Amino acid sequence: MSISNNLSPQALAEACAKSMWDEDNASRHLGMELKAVSPGEATLSMVITEAMTNGHGTCHGGYIFTLADSAFAFACNSYNQRTVAQHCSVTFIAPVFAGDRLTATAREVSRRGRGGIYDIAITNQEGEQIAEFRGHSRTVKGMLLPE
Image (cartoon, rainbow, N blue to C red; front, top):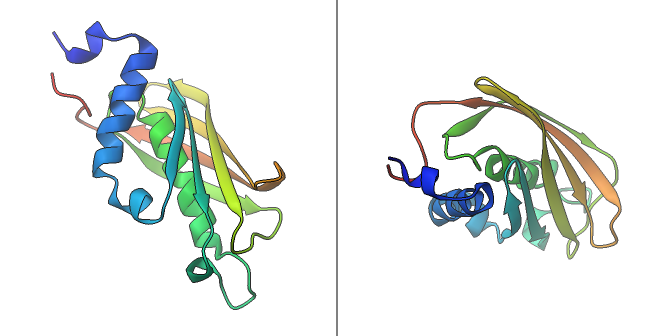
């Protein structure tokens, strides 16, 4: 009997998130904070530093993408099935500057078989949407939590 059979869906999502967070050097190193997780959903935030700005004086899009990708990862790995990104796209809506706090909120749109679709809204500290990210996931072999 697997450990996941003994947990509520919310407790399972939280246990999966903790397991991932403990090994997620990239998200932690960039100063991300895991704010919330539930089945198929996750919210992460990050403050943009001077080191994350580009030649235009705005946040390099790769950092915005990375924050959204991390929220996507925590949302789609909330069921104790190892899940990876298969395809992702981002649309940048407004500029971001050093000192801005970004929040990425991921929500599951569809999850069937081994594939899933997730939408991630990225907002600034004023609640203004600055980007929209869509991720397509694919489950692979293995689980996050031990049997």
